[in-house]
Length: 95
Image (cartoon, rainbow, N blue to C red; front, side, top):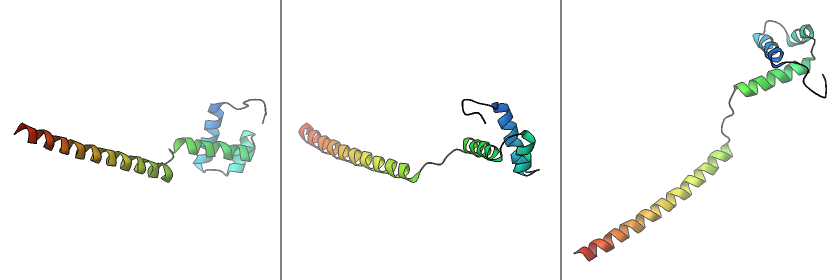
């Protein structure tokens, strides 16, 4: 494989991955028939799999969101308490 640029078209790579996914023949045989290195075919197949399957959210990001939501909830509770007190204060003056 060339080090200075692409050697294979995206269409060629997709077809190679499709043949590998079919499971009809061993990867080594498919790679040999296509004139590519076995590891190259494995790499293309791995990249195609990663692109096709969305990555789940990581646990740290869920924990971070949970902390953010808890802080927001604390602020909203505090604001609600202030509004309750203000309502009571102004209602008392209206009598």
